[in-house]
Length: 145
Length: 145
Image (cartoon, rainbow over all chains, first blue to last red; front, side, top):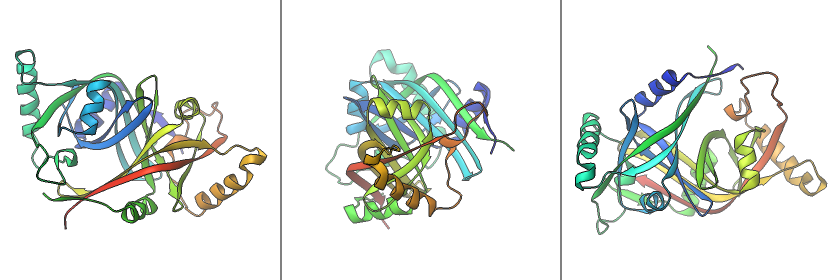
């Protein structure tokens, strides 16, 4: 099986198509992965979640990794991995423009997939935390045609 | 949307069905995710990979997270997240039995999906590193039927 590295442009195309990504954060050397609905605007990845373990860990350590893949079968797949930094888009003046942008790009996508925003009990707070992942590096690999 | 927590038995059933998981490791607070072919034998997760960044990081810090999901659409999905420890199954006497078991469970699955074992150049070493993830905790969530 031949595997090739994707160009930065090709990696960004994969991110642009993605509706679900897996995001990993880490605390005290322990990584934690969750699937998450995302929207890539060509520069940053946008998402939101209710407050919980993931948000708490990313607030404490903003270094994250995002993985997106398109897997048809064992011989036909594409994977893209991005390293970046969590940036919470608060309701403060400093984030006003970025938050409006996040709400706009996230709003464009209907039926947003976000188990992170679904709660198992109704007593938990449901105010969403908006955030973006500022991407530092992206790499991608794809099986040969 | 209603979401329920899965029982330990239900989580293990999801892991048993999985052929592809995402595994995250971490170094100096930076998490790293890769998709990986896996086989769950009811207790541990088995896999293999050629030597590379993932293996080097897990050797340095064995704390990992494994995520498996079954996503139909935004309203119908199951996710399972396991925390565990990377354990390399070397060719030494200490791992002889575990390694034979790994080769057996991995061998049962044909057409094993493992981009981690595919290399982009033929000059890179291709000797596989066999390992298992010893699971400490598993949690799972599923949308209501």
